[in-house]
Structures are given as C-alpha cells and as structure tokens.
Length: 432
Image (tube, rainbow, N blue to C red; front, side, top):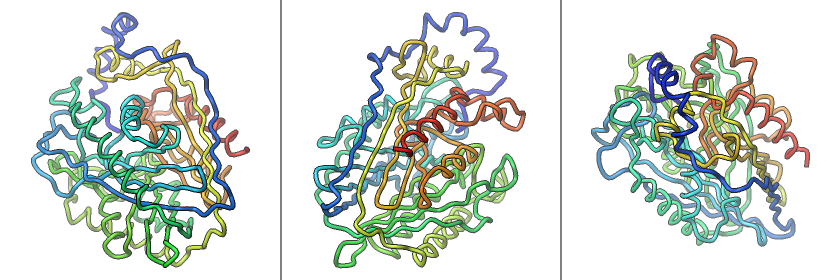
C-alpha cells in the first residue's frame, strides 16, 4: 500500500499539525468495548450446503485510481471488477465469504457495506479485498493531489448493494456440496520478496466445492502476492492477476471462482522489475497464466473432506494508533473511522474451519514472517486471508520496524505491536 504523501512532505505536515491533532481529529468515538469472542459451529450431522454468486462493481466513469500515487485518473476499463461471494450453511449456521476487486476497505466502510446485507449479521461475514493497485480509490488516500481523497461516497454505497445482491443470489443457490482441498507450494519463480530478494512463503491453498452430481459450484484460491502487475503508469481499471485467474478458472474449470490474497506485506509481489519497464497487458496475462497453472496442478493434489463440519471463531483486538501519518490523516479528514478511548482501533481476526481446512484472517497486509509464525500454529491445511474485514496497512513485528530494510513499511504501519497482538489472539482462537 503506497501512502498518500511523500515522506518529506509528511514529516513537515506532522510537525505542524501534530500539536493540534487532538483538537481537529476526525475519527469518531466508538461505543464501549465489550470484546465478545464469537463461536459459530454447524451441526455435524447436517449436510454442508454451498452457493456462489458474483456482481460487477466496475465504476461507471473515470475515477481516481488507488495504489501508486495521487492524480492518477482512469481513462478506461481493461477488465471488469467484481465482488465474489461464497455462502456456506450447515444446519442453522451460515457464513458468508466475499472478496472485492479493490485495494482495501477500512473498518467503518466495511461495517457500512456489511450492514447493507440482509439476512447476515456482520460477524457471520468475512469480507476481503484482492488489493489490486488498478482499481478506484476507496480508502481516501489517492485523490487528485496529495492529501486529498479520491473516494466517491455513492460508489461505496453501491458496493453495499452489490454485496447484498450477490449474497442473496448465492444463498438462493445453496445446495448440498462435497469439499476437496489441497495446500502446496507454488513454483518459486512466480512471486518474490522485493525486500529480501526471495519469497518467504509460496503456499497456495485450494478448495473445490462440488454439487452431489459432480458439477463444480466454486473454486477458492488462496495465495500471497501484490496485484500490481500493471504499474503506476497504467490508467485502465483492472482486477490484475487475481481477477484474471478467476476468469480462467470459470472459463476452463466451470463454476465460480474466488481469490483470497494472503500474507503479502513487506513485500510479496510478482517476480518482475520494480519499475514500469517490461510491464504491459501481455505481462499480466503471463503472470495470470502462471498462477492458473499452479491451480491446475493443485487439482491433482485434492483430497476430499469427509463429513466436513463448519466453524467460525472471531475475536476483536484493541490496537492503539502509534503512527503520526495515521494521526495526520485523521486530522485532515482523509482517514475517517471510529476509535475507542486512547485512540484505539477495534480490529477483528477470525479462524474459519471447513472440515480439515483451517483459515485465519488478517485485518491488513501481514508480512510473511507473521504469516509463517501463524501458519506453524495452524492445521496442515492452512489458509490465510489477508485484508479481511479491514485494511490498516502493513503488519510487521516491532523488531523489524526498527530496521532500515522496513522503513517504508513502518511508515504505513499503524502500530508494530499489532503483529504481536494478532499472533497472540489467533493462538488463543486456534487453541480452542
């Protein structure tokens, strides 16, 4: 995630505004914090039912594009953006999984979008974003000039309606399903760690949901990598490689497709030069085909989940804001969200189990060290959903936040201690 102002400008503004920040902060006081731990479990004897649907969310006209810098106005659409929805039901318990082809949605936006979906409580939904860097600004960080928002409030409301429509269609299509899964290593040349020069976690997770007649309902893919195949000079909206991979799955394998990004922070990205050189639509196709080839390989590794049970556990973390840029963003009215006393954000993490599959969520861009630490605590069939239910930037350990290697990531990290909080909270949920 590229923040909305250059470091030198940010430093000057922080020095000017920070003494006045408490008086001009735009964040709203949240209600008293209760921190309930949610535990939803389906009836083991009941069949697992699955439904899928998607809706286009491509903006109607030119928008300010997110992900690289301010002033990037879209000139066209290369491929449509979607919200993809998978609904799971077992007995009286139902869970909604959704992914938007967007750079990320912050907590308050996520809450408003979830509230637009009838029939599901917010805690029954895991809603994530692919993190495409060629979609509209939905976070308020990439407007016409630095320190301005590019958000269209009407578009945010549209996202709620589109999620509601896809959720209704997915629920209406529910039918008993068999689940097969595989967790394996992708080919190492597809992604790399731009900070360290080598990937730290090449894990790909694959789930295929099939109706009892053998027809594919949906394929879920989980892998880590920034969708920034198209660089900052691109002016056409695109879902980047996650959307293209989903399109290839639907075209060649049948059924629907949904792509959850993983622990992509600091900084997992397609193995390409870190500049605009050598990047184009043919590059996007090549990366997408490489990832799709790994999906096809995973089909040969699938194992059926016998009598799968459905369970979702969720807990909320109170994280103090310890980043002057975030405080400045609030003071300027660019970042708007609820906070608890002491400038604390309420951030949720979840553990989802579907038979032997165990997925965890991160409320932002967790980096591979955290992902690997959590994966070691998970069951062998471990999935990790990044940018889920929130987007608070990079999530790195306090020790690494002191290193020059992570200067940029630290500058857009709300609080390095959040990594430890997430690790400990997920450890407790995984132990239950």
